[in-house]
Length: 316
Image 1 (cartoon, rainbow, N blue to C red):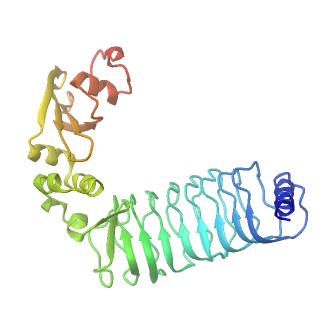
Image 2 (image 1 turned 180 degrees about the horizontal axis):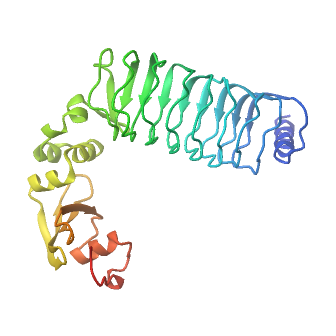
Image 3 (image 1 turned 30 degrees about the vertical axis):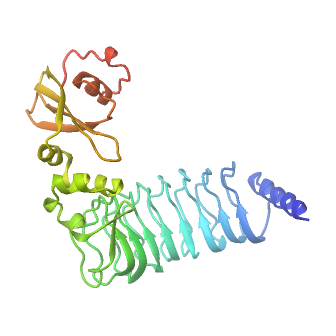
């Protein structure tokens, strides 16, 4: 019986992919079209859940009805969604061609992480009490004022987002890693904070100048230690931590140094210290811990696996 049901589902999927479905189609339960060759959904499609991830869909029919979850992850050609789209969960992660969301959108959970073309959310929409993930939408300039209450909010790697709507209340946590946020207003002053998934406190998030190299080196949690180094800045961290110089040489910018600092329960922290010959500006550039010389590190940064093949006429 189960096999017959699977065979029937497979036949339905095949007919949809081949474009042989005409007229309204109602499916009880979930429809999985992910990673298929489908280019267009049939008109009048109705189902409880729809997964069309990693397909070549460009748009969706205006009369599409999905009751619970609509998953369109990594649909890199998707450009349009129908106005007034209503669904419980809408997952658009990695839809890199999507430049806008439809007016009248009505969802509980919205994930548009990695939608690099997205500059704003709809002027009129409802995102109801669930979660909003805009992580990696680096062109997104802000969040709309109609946002009132969310369970979780991810604005990581959104450098243009510097503040939240004044009337927005987040219940559980906000991920501010790599965002433009410099603080939180009431009523979010006590909400949990994350930095790209790692739980942090307000001092780490908003007062990185107070972090010390000694604090970093004493931190046992490797993920939190990496966040501390990022917040402190690699250059200040290495300057204050007294790393070992394992190689020196000269290039057009002057002396270079390869610096190594052992890290407990983690790979060594290795950086190439160098200066730009054109501007004289100093740089501290992190490289893999396998580097043993300044030349090898410079070759790796230039894209050479074999440092013997890296023979620049002049380095700038």
